[in-house]
Length: 209
Image (tube, rainbow, N blue to C red):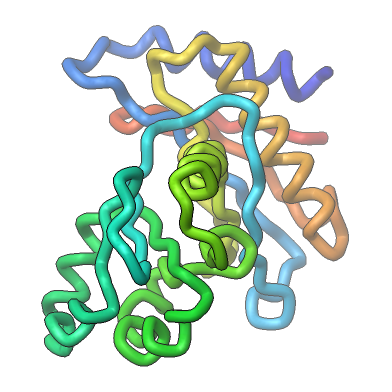
């Protein structure tokens, strides 16, 4: 409860800043401590209660699907050039794949999508069944998913939009925070502090002790 009150106060301070002409993203910053990135790297998905935004999703599938931008196996050869894969990676936030195509997806796209954390994942993104309903349900799940990945001692995650009610933003942050705590080897001891910010503001720091 104490964390929720601190988040509420921080959001009130952020909303005092001058309004921008676009809907700013709300970012959560988690500063870690006593955490060895190489030994204890995190790469997990967490479901949040409130959708942050509609992600741009691309599927490597055996047949075109009306719910998702599709790249067929026969089109893989177009991406022999690394520059085209890099352009593709900028176009889309998330990639899914049909399980039967994963070996070829890994061969064609792995070297470029892997380092960006955008390779289709067994956790959320590899499907055996590609009928309309399954893909639609998967997209809804993806749009409420946040990826927690440690590449440095600070994790920055989009948790909402400025236009969302404070309660929804706080719900998302506390869900992510609790999920992160369970995944860290020393739980709360591994977190130095939190920060939240809008796209164009400085962070509001939040002590967790």
